Image (cartoon, rainbow, N blue to C red):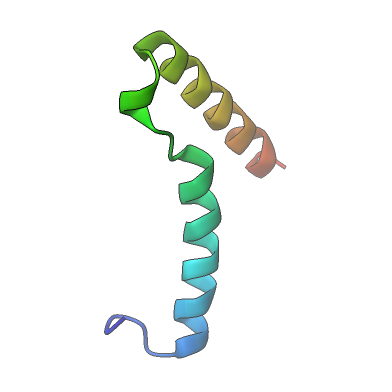
Length: 53
């Protein structure tokens, strides 16, 4: 928190980080490696399409 000069900046960052983290965060130990890679690739593709415009 000390790196942010304004609380508003911190809130914007936290909101963005939360959505990105939830999009890519997957329980790796609970699924097989190929399944994890497929999910991660799909998430990354969706992310790139979202911000390609």
